Image (cartoon, rainbow, N blue to C red; front, side, top):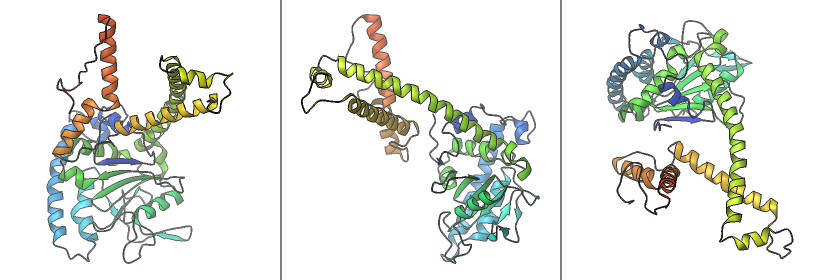
Length: 363
């Protein structure tokens, strides 16, 4: 699984593999015509051209933002000089909402919508100096930008929406979660300043206007909803396989520990006829093994998602590569498989180790 340093999927809104599948063209809607392009036009070339234009626009916006007084949230500048033209490169034609929506006796001051229709997907744009998770200093609107859009989606037939302050862009969906937020977040500043083209590729392929519904009527048929349902189905299959894998792993660990020559004390303590105070009940052994398996799973998922030793600078990049080469579970798996193959072919095992990336010794 690739690491996308500027993208975060929170609350399981989409599956962790969704971005890889998008870039590999394994999901529907990835042909040039699906983006409204000529069939002979390369989608990647179109995205590369948009990336260059967006970066130039971003540079101008940042310079203009620096000249604003610190007390100015930069709302008009963020909307007019940056977000609206930026989303234009993704096929959006935003419409300003002159009045707040009224739903169930509550008002929702959503700034824009993604089309002429009144029930087009909501796009809420606030100033660059307004955090998405906090109320504006004025106390209006009554909710933080993220919460305002989420509650609006939950109370209406709109299914998907976007909220941004120009630096961070989030994709939200109607959600039944009360305590946990679910969204896909794009760090626009990191993507553009760090020139993370693959992250921009994923952003373009996931958030292009053609991915969202035209109106509330076709919300359950849009590409985003298909990706969402695909993630749910994929998650169900993974959980089923995970259950079988955990059971097999516990059995393998138990048999391995009990049969090892150095485990005579363990075998004695689990024997049914053993009655001393340090006896290990079968259920206790099972709990200990289950805890060990889930620690393995936690480590594997953390490494797979790039949460351990993130790449943020040249020095940390070198450290990350060294870690990946020598000290991760993936490196251990590669070594075990390589050593196992050598043992089978030669009849004897060598304690030496070879790195999947380098023949040098570990640091």
